[in-house]
Amino acid sequence: MLSLNLPSFEIKLKEKDGKTIIFDVLRKRYVALTPEEWVRQHFVHYLLKDKGYPSSLMANEVFVRLNGTSKRCDTVLYRQDLKARMIIEYKAPNIEITQKVFDQITRYNMVLKVNYLVVSNGLQHYCCKIDYHEMSYHFLPEIPNYSLL
Image (cartoon, rainbow, N blue to C red):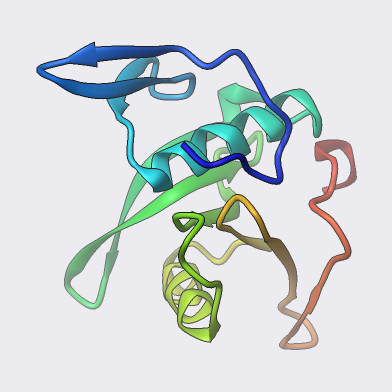
């Protein structure tokens, strides 16, 4: 797999039925290793180890109902009261982060109404803070530490 713009971690890989699987620390099970999953696992470990995010308040593959259809958020960070706080969307490293990607995560936010939207392809990372009072948003220079949320 491609080297990413994220810190390394102790990667747990296995072979199953001729395919490589990777251990997901949040789901506590092995999942298929795809380029997007490679980014997810690196980013989740980055949030846990470098940014101080608690694993107990994070979940991967969170389903939401939007306009009668079921959608899947890649990772959601929750508050202590279990209200969603941040949505994180991952793309494979070869996928350019475009307005279309932000449109996708914004649709998820129509349901969850979080304060932060994060998008990463493992090479580039973007974080927006939503200001519902001013009906605006602004990009942050970096992914905030958990203590600053």
